[in-house]
Image (spheres, rainbow, N blue to C red):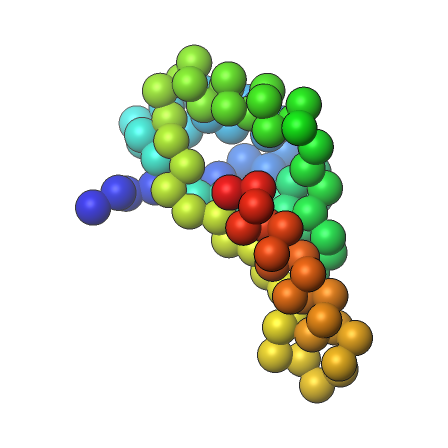
Length: 97
């Protein structure tokens, strides 16, 4: 079983600073909850290849792995447009993972 830290309480840290904080707190795994600079609440993922590369390096340097991603999208909305956007964003989140 992977016991991971959800670093929501450390959201003031950059994405690249999170792995070292997770390791400092004694965890080997991180759960990425929504954050404005990565998988934002109910919006399209804001992730670019350079960002993924720098985050992977930070994870490797800290000896931390990603256990889960927690994207939040309105895939069960009553609004057809919101559901379509949710499916599109969810697919992108899966590609990022």
